View 1 (tube, one colour):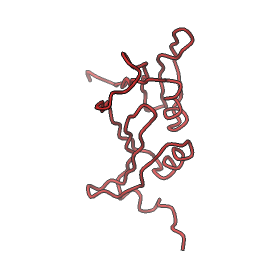
View 2 (tube, rainbow, N blue to C red):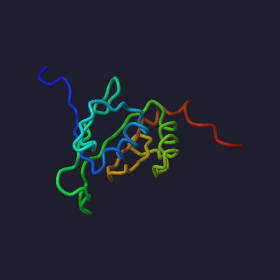
View 3 (cartoon, rainbow, N blue to C red):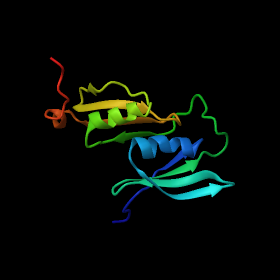
View 4 (cartoon, helix red, strand yellow):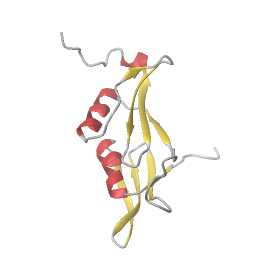
Length: 134
């Protein structure tokens, strides 16, 4: 195999603030911090299966209005639990919706303005939906 892994580099205006989503929200571990003048300018966030490099955004720390950046699609083990966790941390999450293409999803925009979609196959949720009040 020519390529065995890939680590996306995610630019951030404020890495300490970004860790609220990546570490607190997603439960990833921060590792290999790089600092300049006491300020965090780069770090790895990871678990046993995923790795991302968070890096200080080059140029202006302010995201231009027309900047799309990147979008990430996450496949959580428990869609409802990760949504509740992110809501408790103060992130605004969309409602969970069943899509016509067979996925059940919700969206969150992190503190850097990046869109994260969390989704699972709708068929996988049949027995895991929270009970509805009577």
